[in-house]
Amino acid sequence: MSIHKHRVWDGPTRVFHWALAVAIVALIVSGNIGGNAMVWHMRAGYLVLSLLMFRVVWGFVGGHWSRFSQFRLSPAGVVRYLRGNQSTRDSDILGHSPTGSWSVVGLLAVVGAQATAGLFSDDDIATAGPLAAHAPSAIVDAAGAYHTGPGKLLIIALVALHLGAIVFYAFKRKRNLLPAMLHGDHVGASAIDAPASRDGLWVWLSGAAVWVLCAALVAWGVARFGG
Image (cartoon, rainbow, N blue to C red; front, side, top):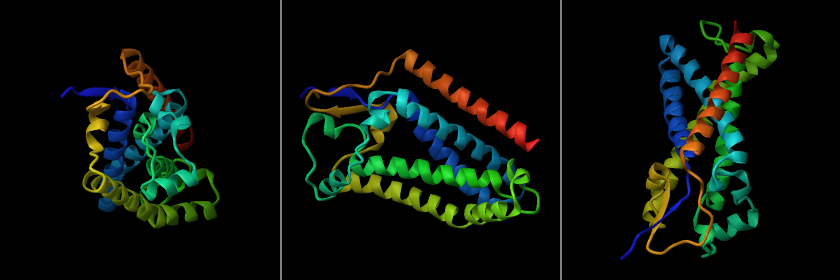
C-alpha cells in the first residue's frame, strides 16, 4: 500500500509550537520555585512574548494551514464537529479542526494576557516587570493578582486541556496529532486534493527573520522601559 504525505505544518510553525511548550513549562516551574529562579522566569516570559508576536505575524504570512484565514471559527461548525458530523472533504481533515482553531485563539489570548500582566507585576520583594514602574499602583496590584492567581490557573488548565485533547484524539478519534507537529506532514493511504504549505529554505529563513525582529522589539522594550 502506497503512503502519501501532504505538508500541513511548515517548519517555523512547528518550532513555534515546541518552543512555546518548553517556555510555558519553564515559566510554571520557575514561578513555583521563586527566588533566584525568577531571573529565568522573566527571561522565559520575554521569550513567550516574542513567540506570541511571531505567531500573530505568521498567522498572516506563514504556511497555508498556519494562517488565521484557514481557522474554522464558525460556532455552527464547532457544534457539528462536536456532534461528529464533520465534513469528509480533503481540505477539512487538514489544519486545525474547529475546536483546535478556537484552542489556538484561546491559547494566544490567555498566554498573551498572562505575559502582559507579568510586565506590570511587582512582588514588592525583588522581582518587578519592566512596566511596573511606569503604571499606577492600582494597575500594578491588579496585574500581580491576576498573574499569580487566575492567570496562572488558566495557563495550567490550558496545558491540561491540550494534553487531554491529544489523548482524546489518539484513543477516541484514532488520530495521533503529535507526529504531524514533528515532521509537518499528514500521512495517509490516499493523495489529498488540497493546498500544501510551503516549507523550503526560504520559509525557514523568513520565519527566523520574523522571530528575530519580534525578539528585538521585545528586547528594545525591556531595555527602554525597564532600565
